[in-house]
Image 1 (cartoon, rainbow, N blue to C red):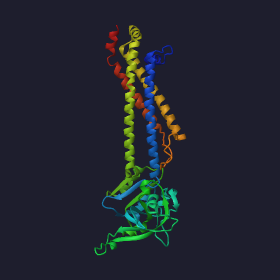
Image 2: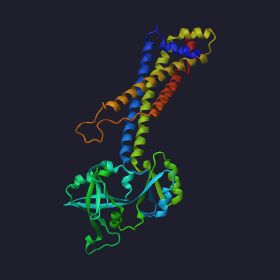
Image 3: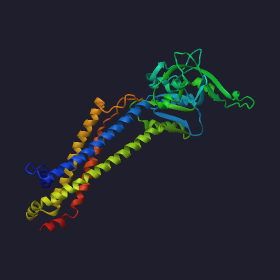
Image 4: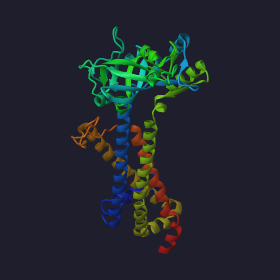
Length: 406
């Protein structure tokens, strides 16, 4: 066994020495452990919220979204869509036409987002599983039908069971009447076929109709779309598919992954980095207790140091002993903290100990947790590295201190 490590270990785990130095070292280990455990719990909590948000967005968001850089809509032919479908990893392509509309029902009105989609939309999303009333049907032989978010239904008093239609109003892009402004709008009645509850983004704003209905209202051509939504297989390489689509379509299109489509992912990433840095700073502050432990240990072990040096030990060996002593404190503290933080996080995930108030309107009943091995690895190396660097400080002028002992 390495001599310096053997001596450092003996100093830290000596059974016959239970003085103030050992107590201070124990406190240093405990402080580092608490700070490390807190970091694990915070990261697991952020992961839980990210997983929750991702699960909500994954219900309706495409893996890739294609829009034009030159306008609200663009013309896409069947050949271009087939070329995209031929790319390895692409599961399906959904054509989308959407715009803002005004909806009215018995004196109540609301600005919403009308989204017209092709028949394969429901097959590639989980929207059918988010229905709370009715069915996800967009076509009917007799009526214009659509699916609406629960927030819209609640605000306007829309119900599938009531069989009452609401009207949609949209400015006429082709005709404006000064004499009769009402003629400047295109309007139609929509019978609700279903009501969905996904998240605030969908629930409060979206109405889903067939793409034919949307094109008719917006006066769009048969092959004109607002965007193309690309759905891929689970094991597909999204970035490779994105680059290949860009090559096939040219530079007049903007292609975004799901992480680029929603700002919430950027916010979550920023929050994660900020939280990690804040908690790491706490670990750094906590690790400063190692300086005090090593300083007092050096003073207490001055006779041992003199004995070692008289036997031929060099100053570098003495420094290495105390450096390893400080490092062991941080490593042990980090390991204990990781165990405690992991145990608390797992208990929260399994038993939902910390819950949201029962009267609140929450998607989940308790704080979500998602434990990741990468967090444990990063936290351990961060905490142990901080401890190692801090342990260097009291050893900088060790030679001068030793000369004072003589």
